[in-house]
Length: 418
Image (cartoon, rainbow, N blue to C red; front, side, top):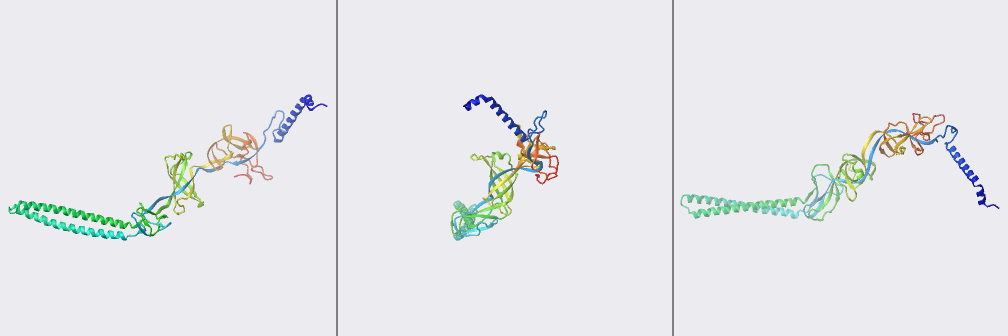
């Protein structure tokens, strides 16, 4: 009995021809099914391109914005700690966390009993010094009178020269005593002023350099009755009528940013509300550890809804294109190194590849700067297209008896995108 190997050896050419015929029939069937080979194919006609089902979108006019997103933290426009200038027992606090305070308002008092006594003592010492000064001046007048009399007697030849010299020395000595007494009066006046200043420091006021709206107490550090040391902070005072949002920009965004650009902020506390601000300043250097530059945004806060320390998301508008010609972002394709779109033309419709120069992109739209496009472009199925490919629009099905929508002004149906 002949083996399979022997049968294959005798009929291998016939088997090979049969396999080739089967492959040819399969290829022809595939071309016929897909539409590449049909009734139009014949002598002198060649192959016709397959009709590709595509989805289209209109070329529209819109406003596009070039946006950059950052995150940051809010800080008070001004913040400082109110501290006691002298040590002592905290007798009372007149404000607490969240209270509004005005410029010059009394916010705390220290126990002043000891300092009141110091002022009284300084007054008494000043009185003693003033009395000593008056006594020294009176005695100086006596010495001057004696000196004048001694000079008259000496001129008349009655008085001795030694008596005149003695009167002159006495007058000079008394003048020195008057100057010492006057210096002591000045010293006691200064001591009284110091005592009064220290006494005034027992009344603690809140103050800042310029007039403005009331500020708010941010945090309290002490309690009534506590013994304080000099310069110990009592509480913080914040100006939150405007806040500063601090964020950091990378090198990629740094060149696009500049002071004066408007920004939009959103805080987690108010997710459905947007706040407006403006870039106030940008640092001229980058931090080595992060390669980012500090950026500060001024945020008006007249309602005082935003608070220091809040986390915010910031959107910065770099540029804007008003009345821009836009197409869907996914409709822009690359063919042989050229960027373009497939514009649907004619009836029956075909797709023409149109090279384009694009501009701003926002979300799912992109600006077409050149050329002046009109009509509809393919935004789904364009990867199957070549220039001139016939297409079938599946995004705008026609009702019975209604001609299909076309790219050259045909009436769109309810299923067409607008």
